Length: 170
Image (cartoon, rainbow, N blue to C red; front, side):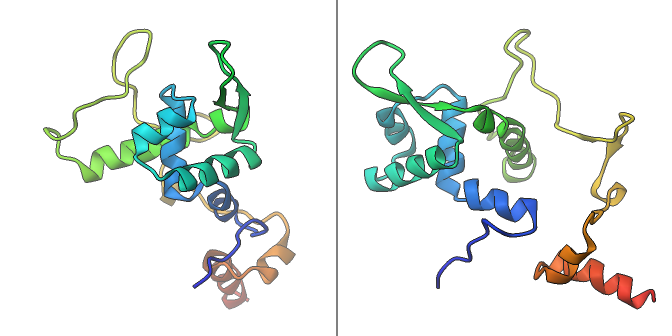
């Protein structure tokens, strides 16, 4: 079964997954944030076949998430470096990590912690904040459609539900 192309989807989550949703890509990004820059470093860390790693790196470069730069040591090699677009994924990876720590590990099982470089203390849990600084949960937010014609065109279950609920109120 062929995967659906989400590059033109109306949902920002779907489009984002089109760029970075493949799990090897997320692990490559994790390693890039941890300082890995060379193909061999990614290969050794991930234990991934060269052809798959090469394809994932090429996609991340094509998406503008990584860029190929000259080796930092002046050698003839090239390295992969996070772009601004790539560095902006940091909160997503931290959030995914924190979710995994909470639900997929026993406290005794976790052998690492993400700490603030300056004071070596664990970072705080990522929170969603309102414009006035209040912490928000999913029950505290709603999706506001700016273009109602997008709701009618959508095949997304969330949008259909919003559209249906508006019709039922009429």
